[in-house]
Amino acid sequence: MDFSFSDELAELQSTVRRLARDKVKPRAREIDETGEYPQDLFDAFAAAGLLGLCIPTEFGGSGAGIMGLTIAIEEVAKYSNTAALMLLLTRLPTGPVMIAGSEDQKKRYLPGIADGSLRASFGLSEPGAGSDVVGMRTRATADPDQDGGWVLNGVKCWMSGVAQADWYTVFAKTGDPSSRRHDSITAFIVERSAPGVSVGSLDRKMGVRGVDTGELVLEDVRVPAENVIGEVGGFRLAMLGLNSMRPIVAARGIGLAEGALMYATEYVKERKAFGGTISDFQGIRWEIAKMATEIEAARLLTYRSAALADEGKFTREWVPYLSMAKYYATEVAVKASGLAVQLLGAAGYMKDHPTELWYRDARQLTIVEGTSQVQLGLIGKGVLDRHLWWD
Image: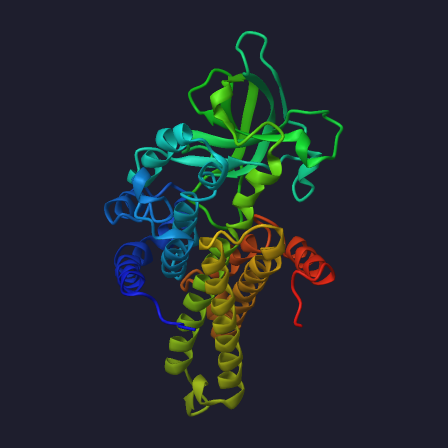
C-alpha cells in the first residue's frame, strides 16, 4: 500500500499550490465582497490546464481523473471555495455524460469544458424536491414534431454556475409525474441557446459568492433524442455521476479546513498575551492538535474515495465509502472554521481576517450534493446491507 502520490500527481499538487498562492489568495476577499464572477481565475485555470483534469485525453482533457481534480480543489479551497467550485463544475455536469453518455455527446460537449470555451451546470434540485429527488415536477413529454425528441417544462433551482453555463445536465420526469420510481426520471443535455431556456432569479447567498447560483426556467424546450443521457428512464445510471462526486466535494472541505487552521495557527504564534503568546497555552495546542488529526483523517477518507471513484467503484456497494468522505470532510470544515474564529477571538469575527469568510463558506458544504444527514443515511444503509462490513 503506497500512500505517496505518483510523480505526475505530486507535480500537479505543486503547480496548483503555487497558482493558488499567487492568483487565488489575493483575490478571495474581493470576490466575496463584490460577488462578481472571477473570470481572471477561470482564465488562469484554463491556461494551467486545470479545467480538463477529470476529462479523458481523447476528449481534450489531461486524464488526471477524480484524484487529480481532488488534489487541485484541495489546494485552491485553502483560500477560496468560490474558486474551488469553478473547478468542481468541470466534473458535476459532465459526470453523467462521461459515465452514461454517447460517444457523440462526449465529442460535442467535453472538449469545450477542458479548454474553457464552454461552461456547464447541473440541474437536479427543485423548490419542492431537494434531497427528495423523485419529488421533482419538471416534465419531459414526447415531442410530436421530432422522432424521439422531448419537450421540457419546469424550474430547477440552486444551480451553481447557472448564469455562466453554455449547457446544462437536467433531470426530468419522463414517466408518470406522480411516480416515485427512479425509472420515471431521465437525464438530458439542454443547450443554453435553445428556445424556452432562461435563467430565473439568482440567489443571495451567505457565502461562496462569485459563482452565481439560481434558477433555470424551462418553457416548452425542445430537446432532440440525441441529447438524452444514457437511456430514457436511466436515472440510476446517470446518478452514478453524483456518487463519484463525493471525493470532489470532500476536497473542498479539507482544503478549507487546512486553510483555516494554518491561518489561525500562525495568528496564535504571534498574538501576545499574559507575558507570552497564545500558542504557549496547552489548551490551545490541544485544540490545534485535535483539529490537525481530524483533517488528516478526512484527507485519508477523501483520497481513498477518489481512488475508488477512478477505479469505477461508485456503484451502490461502494457508496458508504464515498459518503463517509463527503460527510466527514465537510463537517470537519465547519468545525475547523469555527475553531479558527474562536482562536482569533474578536478579531476572528471581523472582516480584517479571512476566518469569518471560511466560517460562512463552510456551511454550504454540508448541504450541497447530499446533506450530511443524507450521507449518514447512505452510510447506515451500507452497514445494514453489509456493503460496509468487517468480517
